[in-house]
Length: 86
Image (cartoon, rainbow, N blue to C red; front, top):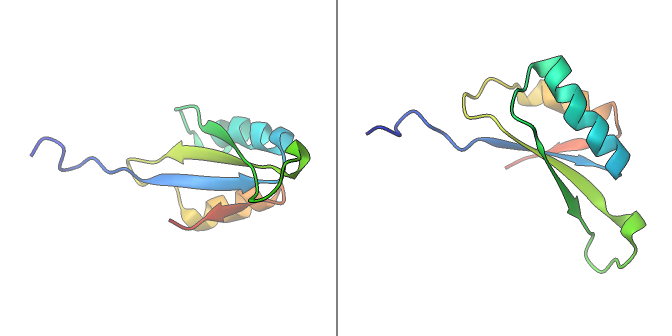
């Protein structure tokens, strides 16, 4: 069982716009020591055609399970965002 200790824990942070998502992605390294660059994903709201109505997701892997969900909630709230529950 070589992969017994590997987990696929991911945190999804939802932000109101691209600028906020980019700032959060950069600040994650500074605040939490995240070494792997988070993935930025544009998430258009259902039925919305306007790019201005898109939310941005910051997806980061946490295979070691060292990031506290409560701290991430508080952190992303500084940019008027939230952490999605899995």
